[in-house]
Amino acid sequence: MGIEVRLAVIMAERGVSGRALAAHVGITEANLSLLRQGKVKGVRFETLAAICDYLNCQPGDLLVYRPDGAG
Image (cartoon, rainbow, N blue to C red; front, side, top):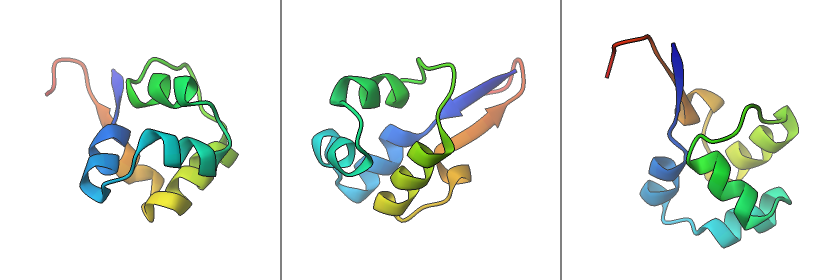
C-alpha cells in the first residue's frame, strides 16, 4: 500500500513556485521539496491546511491512496 503525493502536479497546474508556497506555509524549500517527492513520513495538519489554503484545494487533491500493485 502506498500514498502518492500529488503536490508537484497541483503546483504545476496552478503555476505556483516552490519558493512562494514554502514562504506562505512557513517551511523551508528543502522540506517542501521532500514533501513534493513523497520522501517524508508525515505532515502536520497545520502544514497541510496552509498548503491547501494557498493552492485552493482539498487534502484529497494532494494525497492519493494506491493499493499494492496498482498504478
